[in-house]
Image 1 (spheres, rainbow, N blue to C red):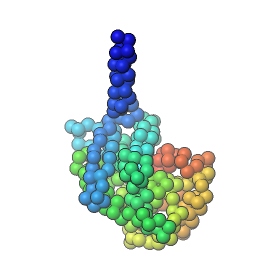
Image 2 (image 1 turned 90 degrees about the horizontal axis):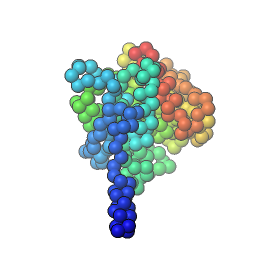
Image 3 (image 1 turned 60 degrees about the horizontal axis):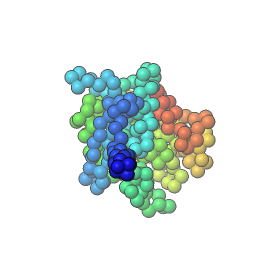
Image 4 (image 1 turned 120 degrees about the vertical axis):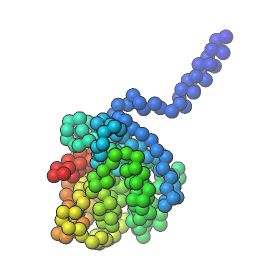
Length: 274
């Protein structure tokens, strides 16, 4: 009898351990929706998480700025919860948060960030898919979000860290008005910096320029820090850029500690003059 009870308990414990985690009681994730979005352009699917602001009401005709987070598998739970704190303190406005996730950490299991977020590099033959990924955003994901949610097409913001930050700079250079706001945190330009020192799009009139916030942790690894500094020195000397530019040195921050500080400072600067 005791053996059968113990066996039943072990079976129950095993089933509980393998059950999907219910996140509805993690209030930091707010009102979060999930979508599995296949891409004909890239030939792969993405896991898309959408957190709606507390003020969101299906019956009220009000649209919101929308923040697209690259590396959403890691940054969506981190920054959506942080957004809720900042928004509660009225430091940043109501917004929709969209996390773009691969559902895995490494390339072999389907994490293609090293391809999707990068311009070509002579050092890595699998880099260089940023153009296709950008087209996935412009032709597939943005229309999907804006047709299913009250998302303002004139207030899109994209956030990326490390090579995600590289993609933010890539899209700011090549399609500067696809997003109204850009936040690049510790952009990793160590393998293809020359691409990012060239002009790739015609400058827009000042009134139509998008906004670009670039943050670099003072304690970042020098292989990332030095190219980011060179990038800023180059573009800060050019007056006729496709965007308004703000660069911030993040005191005390390393490569991996920077995203929350980049997010907060970047959002406050982007919306400071609305």
